[in-house]
View 1: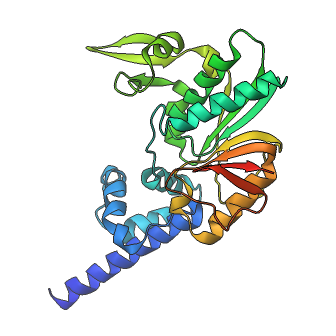
View 2: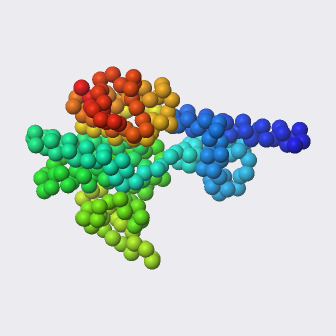
View 3: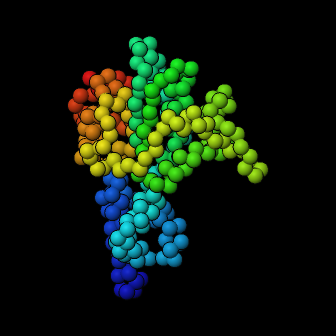
Length: 277
């Protein structure tokens, strides 16, 4: 490789490093050097659409855009949105059991937060489980569903999923809470309005405390998010969650995550499930 080519390559590597740092500064997501190929793959479509092939030019575009739109495009491109209906299904069995116990004790008002809710499968699964517990009883219930990614929030608000997407939903519940529609040669499933009315979707950045959310939440679900954050940010998130959850309320995290040595007033009652004391 010629000296000129070597310098150009180093310039692109530096630009890619700066792009990774921008993502971390804005979202808390740590994209380490060994994730370079992942970053490249996720921003390739956006750069292609803009007619760019060099990372330093894309970086300049982001930094020069005073509206912040291009930075949002970058965040949308690199944020992880892996999700599914009834993902980590034992969590929803636990939720149904706990809410049923609360109902028996006379509780008639519930507040939940699905943090990093992606395309909506998690909060809609939660809504289904709650409706099954409530039956015909009139219950005051709100689910806040948030994500930093604008695109996934738009998809979540529409609440329309492919046949493959809804396969994890048991058939009786699928028939009850989704409307089957024809989409060319395929079928798609639209969430019924009864569930949609329970959920408020909002864009939200978890790295900007204090969170403007009413305290005394019954439950926060924040799964498979903190694995992308450093220890300092995980500690900050945990402190905010503790502040917002009422005594006796729960925090559910991913099975690959742990809050050992991080939380102060919460006790682990099951793997990945914490209760505020």
